[in-house]
Length: 332
Image (cartoon, rainbow, N blue to C red):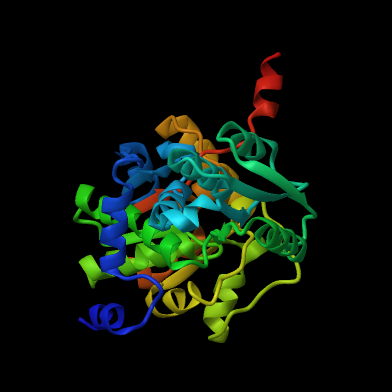
């Protein structure tokens, strides 16, 4: 019961009540995503694996849940001025789509080096793109200028209680679909997804384990857990472009208290997991989305006696927005 007391007693930016409210708020707009399983992958891993397919969510990633909750939480006066965010990835598209559904403007600050497929998603959903340089400081400065000029409401990609609550609906759904899960493995970056997942899951089942999957080239969360404080890196280097953000002051306390461990994986393991998803599950998963499978198949997980009794594991395939130009060119 210790985990339960942590969830109920701590003052996090989200809780099971706000997550249940988010689930009701977004239900007219968000999909209830399917769960897949594979006897082949069970055999390879030596566990029972269940894959929560957030790549089938609107916008192609779990991010729509949080963005939708945030946008539809706004008062009419707030919404009239539009919303703004800075993001190079799935949050940008998700916020654009959520704003479109509410009929308001979305100002999206995007670095010039963002993946083309993700920029195209923003354009497809009607987001108003404002370009910045790649550095986080540039993104933030440009976003501040947009807010000053328009009065738009900032919707941070992860360090926001409304976002955390929306993302927490993933595990509420997952545990309704597969209540026997004893472990959930979640990609970690800024912490919006894993914090919402951890709060909801441990409120529903205090004994459940929440493990994070993180690339070695962006292992700030693992270093933060070890140091007991937020650690940022001078640079990140990983194929998982969606996992390069650093923890925020709202997500860090949840990661510190409720995430049981962090599994570090190599980029080559992520690529292999992407291949397995494509070849066996028949789904196209972006690197960030495949990292949970990479983690459960990694030596760091398989050879760790602490997790030997993790037998029924939920894996969140967080997104499917991968640039397939190279693949298509190979056929031409």
